[in-house]
Length: 160
Image 1 (spheres, one colour):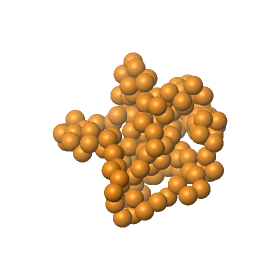
Image 2 (tube, rainbow, N blue to C red; image 1 turned 60 degrees about the horizontal axis):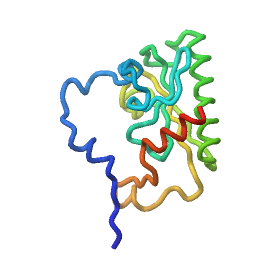
Image 3 (cartoon, one colour; image 1 turned 180 degrees about the vertical axis):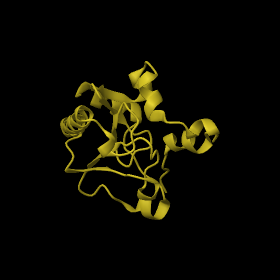
């Protein structure tokens, strides 16, 4: 039997859960002053691209407006235009970097729809490959990622 190392999960599992965790990381990430530490690969005028710290697939990006709003209709037109342009930029960077076979791109609005931070909308850009689904998520409740998050950041940053 081979050993599967999902090294990145332990940080999440062991992290103490406090009221502080209930804050909005989408507001604090751009203020860190270290884009690599924040996993930000691109900053636009009104929105930014960040690697999802707990991705569905390698290269899973989030497109996030700087201003905290819960719904697309709450964005000003300049913010909405920049958000859409940033989504396209993220998709193009993923295509150039990883050459996936397809993409899942979308929003989750509200907790019941899966939004982890329902007060701050964000768009998921998930690269997909033929055959990228396997038995691990279904049977083992484990996601296998073939590349370390920082290695993915380096590659995407170079193409953004």
